[in-house]
Image: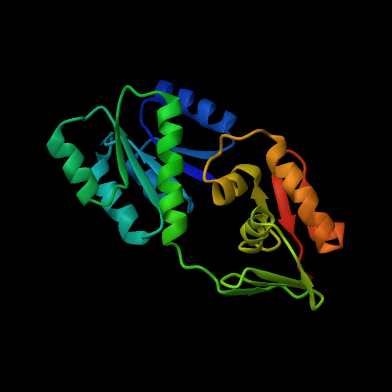
Length: 218
């Protein structure tokens, strides 16, 4: 899960990068409005409003214009009601006033990402060669043969199939399937092991150690 942190205070940024990285997020730090607008695509932006080269509200507006699915959380010391209202009207999904706890921030990140996942367009049928998934019918075939999966196993497979050939981080799977990233480390491993066995070919779901899993459909 990739987060763009827009924060000009280097000490605050360093602390946030460290805390969020430990929780499994991939963080890109931008210290200016220009750097934020030039950054690569991400899943969510944490946006300070006081920036050295521009107003964070304008950055918020422009980021929202680029993507309706991007999660945006304003993280700022500006806590007046009119600022909160303006931030939400500019396209922010949430507004957090400093100081805050990292536990609260993570909960807000998860909530925004959940809403974004629900709102994103969903594939109805995912065809990856050997593996075919009918999402509305919740059915799976491998080489034309039906495979019976539990609800969690099916949801994990769909999470992987939405990014075929790419590594899906463990926390992304947790968020897609369990709607949280707070879970025992072995939770995903156990379900993936069962899914791999039921698919009949352990090579279909590849473990990328220390990162996550990759679905190989061909």
